[in-house]
Length: 165
Image (cartoon, rainbow, N blue to C red; front, top):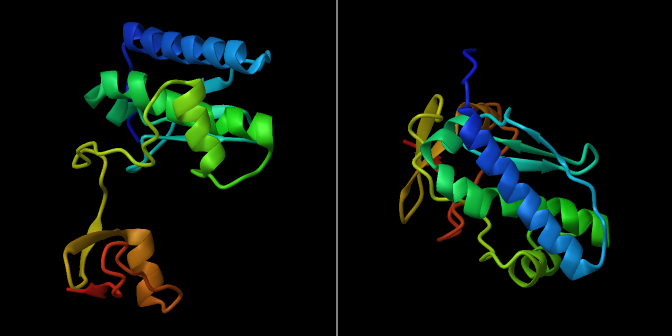
């Protein structure tokens, strides 16, 4: 797999965002939480993930390059909020009331659970499935689980089972 070289200025902007939001949280919460490790290894369609036990934020370098300001303004605080919630409250629902409070009241960022980035550049093989209201694209992993009879999926909008086209 080819490694994507991120411009130093972009890495610095991401780190600056992380440090500013962490300082804001530490001040608001009266804490001194350490700076998490930043890793640019997230793959697939996820913009980022927070690894709680490793106290690490993994960012998708391809989506970062394509959406730099949104990462700085939204994705970095989103993942930082997961780590801060874990440090403050322990294990709770990933996007529950504690996370929403951390995002909005502490970090001052709207609490959006998912991103709306274009995914053509990071989407691998997908398979078309359909429900009553729309078409879905399942990853090869989910498609194979359906084929093997290990899983079935439902539409989050209409609740109907997804059927291969």
